[in-house]
Length: 232
Ligand code: 4GS
Image 1 (tube, rainbow, N blue to C red):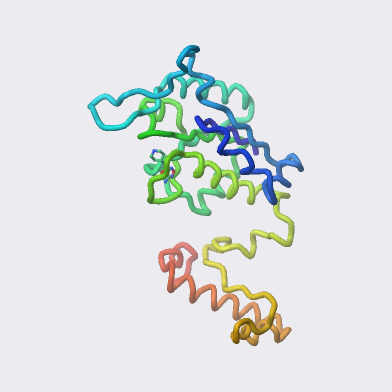
Image 2: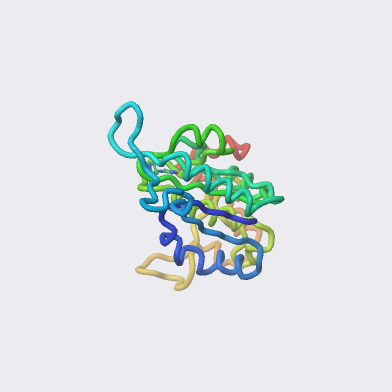
């Protein structure tokens, strides 16, 4: 998977992918993450303007269309033959969930467009964007953190990225449910004991307990997920 990220704040990505699972995936050549500054495509050599006032007189600024279009065209050239999907991170997008992550992980390459200010000119969305994605119903200062969330979640699903130890099979949402509670040593912490079944060594009982807890937790916290998981 090739990620090409278009942003006005490339430095925000310093260190974002240099640890742990993502770094290993990059080192193994399973994914690559390329960061590009939209300002480099402003064409306006002297002022490098990337924002302008909105028509209609609303407060705040918008990202001008020309630098965005040029940045996307350049990214498409870099990814020529890799069939890139252009994703714009915006609260107006489809809410990112594990199904969407799965869908994105099947693509060959993704161009992640990070907005700033009040957003971007609608014509860029209409002409250049394939998919709009939101990471949740709250307002951030830019699309950079959503882009990082997409890279992280999508990379975990690329074959060969996760070892057995971090296996996606024990993650929340893997089977459409929340994960069961987890315990590690010590056996008694601040007077609270680890559930007996987990130290029983009885694997069928342990699996049964985990499945039941997973269902209970999902029913209590996220009943909306139960329909999707084919359980009511
Ligand atoms: C999100 C979000 C977001 C919206 C970007 C206001 C700057 C900001 N993007 N999921 N303009 N939530 N974007 O808040 O994706």
